[in-house]
Image (cartoon, rainbow, N blue to C red; front, top):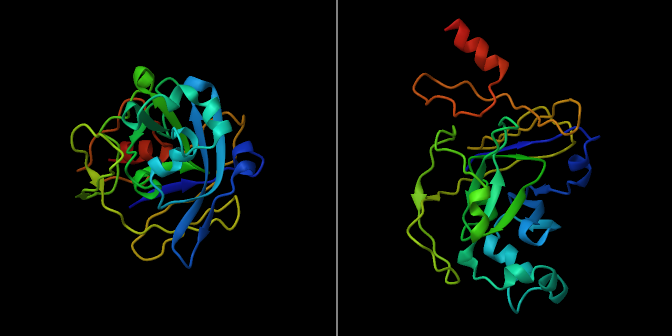
Length: 239
């Protein structure tokens, strides 16, 4: 598994909110997690979410017909009336132009760790829980996304009436440390590749840019709407 984890300057609201930390002894994250339920105009923040929890386990506390918190269930009653296979969870794809927003579709059966594999997270994950009739409002990122090779495996969850088979990313151990909000170095234990960096910029609403790794000639072309770093442009001009 390969996660790109980036941190913002401490003056940014998202940095101030972030309570994510890493338990080095157990080699796992306890994430600060934001869940947005757009069809109910409601959002929740949850602290200390273990990365080995599946999305179904996380959502159970909010929208399960009997096991969720009654007050929360009332706020999300529109979601409670639907089975889990009528829901999808999306994560915004970072590093794109403002007029070309795309999303990753996550797998409810997978753990949070598996779902974040081969993706970029800024401070903490923000998940959009969307009902079937609104899936079209969350266009997916194309297959051109550069990512480390991931092998497939199979797991099933008895709650889900899943349509068709989906590839699962094989879990590889990922570890990182957030000693301060301005980490510039990568924390790379054995077999890991997590990049952490902060970039000063204004205004706050501007999306931070990440310097992507140089790609060999064998990699595919950049997907339309992705932001190219100046270093990438220079490399292409030199070649």
